[in-house]
Length: 485
Ligand code: ATP
Ligand code: MG
Ligand code: MG
Ligand code: MG
Image (cartoon, rainbow, N blue to C red):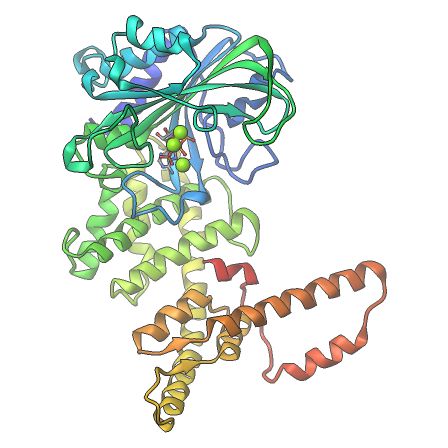
């Protein structure tokens, strides 16, 4: 079943249950406290908190999301995208736990010929809060889930709140058992929610209590909310790879065509080498995320959302480089991603001229950075090798922290790229010295900012700084936060 069809069935199903269907909010978060929309509930926060009356008692959506905290997981787990779509259904003071559980069961296990997803109910496992007797009843007696598949967890593991006094409530997280090929059986009534065997697909949040003051999950429940809410989120791509019989999120119809294109460009076969496979998945994921993020109006920059976009494009270009492609890559990849996403996002066609201009210009800028830095890096590597060969102890050549710092600071060359490219030539980098220099630079920047604020510029520090700068500095567009790339 194509991803676009899974999305359509979601919306059709909840429309048939009297939900208003609301289009996705932009990726640029409507809530100013976060950069990107990270969950389906973000556009509805005021209705869940009760600070504004909800325009509809029940609604459903398929929300575009970006989660940068998952960036390191991409390509390594089977289930994390930086961009993904969260299917959701919500009730604001309308239906509650029992109906939400009925809906989830009916849609997941309902026959495909009658609009459902046709998943095997015997393979579903649900984790609940250990004191949630109502959820337990609804899952076992209600929809008939095997009681052995209902896993009771303490509040630390399965309870939602906003981090402060106000609404809070237990979750019921639905997992699909992909079978023993993906890991050991659940033992002692626990599933491993982080694992690939029991794949987390859908989180139901029952927002029913008022919580008081306290650290972490250690707070009193003061009573029940007057208007209880349902907030759910199911990963569209996760359902897609189950229904498409694929191994992971990157192999579904909306993502895999980019991997196929990468295979053509590199002459490498997906599945032949585990590290190359990770790189191919990173490329496919990041190209798609860049497409969607630019589509929602973000431009590359050195901070905030723009920095996230910059990082996505640069990571994709670097992964291509490590796959052996040194030529321009984006123009071959981005249109493929656009074609794969278009069934669900027809607006990409009209916007593509603008989107591709932004993406291609950013790749060009990064390639210039790489080109300039690479010459400097090669010189530094050469020096390190000469130094090592002059020494008699046969130690590994070491590129100095100051050289790594100059590459970073002057040529915008991220430290991990320096590490990686030096390692390719058998050279280590004095990372500790590099970090020390970074810390010093930060310190100076802080002192500088303070001086500006207080109006007491300490000219001596400028003087010593200018002496330290032995090369003319042309800043090429990185900030020290780049070290994290
Ligand atoms: P996980 O434990 O797998 O990281 P999560 O507990 O962080 O997931 P939730 O915050 O509960 O996820 O989000 C609701 C649903 O959204 C998840 O059950 C999952 O199906 C989906 N989801 C969350 N993060 C991602 C992601 N990075 N890529 C794809 N789908 C995701
Ligand atoms: Mg997560
Ligand atoms: Mg989880
Ligand atoms: Mg979860």
